Image (cartoon, rainbow, N blue to C red; front, side):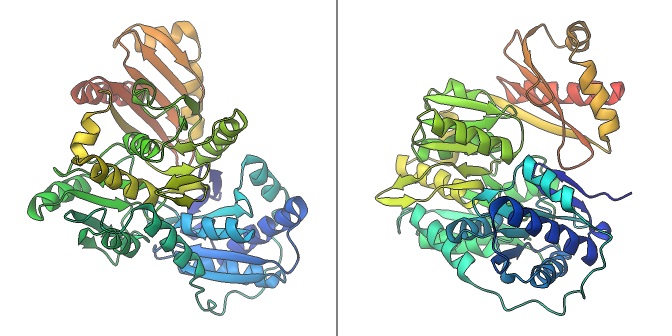
Length: 470
């Protein structure tokens, strides 16, 4: 049985299942859907980009071979951040395919599809699957990749340089944890352009699966050591395809992604914020935004929420996820420069925004965080939990009496919702949330409390009791 499936971030699965013929079949199905639904012309250009994992270049070649086989033109955008590919696709109005597994291990990979107007949605996924023909006789495989076209990366770099004026970060020492991020050189360039002294750290020729929601102990240790040894004001990084940021303060402590999103939205002057239920309640408690919209986890739901906010009359709309990826739902004015909307997850915008906010206010990163309402969140996961196990577990918690008994050990339930999984708010104001991952066979648990220690206790309890129940 194939491991391939659509999740919240495109098609994902084992590299062994992403053969050239399978990748070509999905590419043909995507293009057929684009022609039938969006009127994409038979000789249109289709953009292809890829991250730095070991299988990505080969898979990109298969996708480009399929594009050429259909009579369309393949533009090889090379290794670049996912938002850079999306930006060019939306500016020139053509489809695009990003080969990336984001943060998942190197033995897995994926395809992320973009319509001419942005990310595909669930209806598009169904449309692609409806015309998918994996058994069709494949055209000859890729003979080699076309020359890399630099426009996509150049446009993205120009956008990044415009976020902060030259000299904004003068006097600041910023570390860039490079690992195998496709944006590792992009960040160095942009931060130096803004005036920072940049210290590059931890570059790797082997793919490292950095998950911004579940950091490895070695990443945490690296941040603490690097900030101390290099006297850094901050350490920044991204996941593999640079749609999620990582930011550590001057002490090497990583900021939660939802706090990064909140600070970014404030820096951009948002009047409405859209974020999943997994983001902490400091977003409402801070009082910085006129309206907060809550959604299911996944960028398609955040995009849908941003569209709703714009229809409701809000003018500056920012979306973000608990993993820190920021989606710009409307244009933003930055010191006279108009930053175009980019409704897909981006890591560079929040990195530059948080550093810019600290510079603007004369604050350290930890001081910025200290001014937010005191809400602490922790997240963890139980691996190797298939949907056949997580589904019945979550379903059982929809029953009121069963739910009360399940959570009785940690408190009385004040309110609950099932927007995405099962989320309960206890009478104490503490939050515990269980949901199945959309990208992997995992059950995720999120906990929120007024202290970091208590949030960690609730997370440990949630993972333990869920493991017992499963």
